[in-house]
View: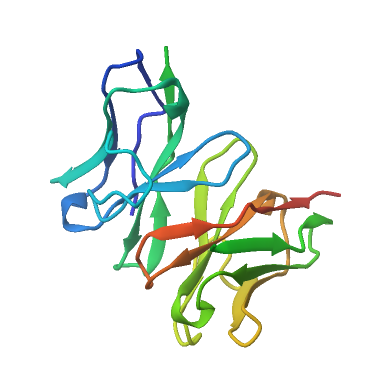
Length: 107
Length: 119
């Protein structure tokens, strides 16, 4: 199972960033999103398509339908600049799958 | 406080072996499935392996199947990854990560251990 993400997304501070994750009928699966800053371990920011873990700002939200899952970061701040990865479990192959990652740049 | 701490990383020659460990604290280790995820230098995340709470379900990525073995010791709150027949392409930071159940989100991660395979 392959997850496809755009390599990069750029947005000005205060604007909205949308990071997509494409996969065959991904809307039928649970998608998780991770944020990773340079030199740090990944941090879970959205799970089960649209649930925010405690401590994650409300500016982070997710959706999933059809062949695309989307992580939305509203009112983007400089501190949101990072790599973002989508992930799911492929029950067909019993394997975990990550997208290639998207670098979010705050202009 | 949930903590996961990897150890055992280092440099090894192609064809060699290495054993990674992940010591955990701050939660009931035996109640969580555990995972290894790696990241080659400058690259994305790659899922490596998953083990269920009682080790009765184990899964591997195709890229490591037959060479890597995941295990856990619930009495010692530790997770392991035995890596044999190492290749240059196994060079990566290896993270251990916790999951509520197999297939669920990885909600806590360690800081990673660097494995370098080079002659």
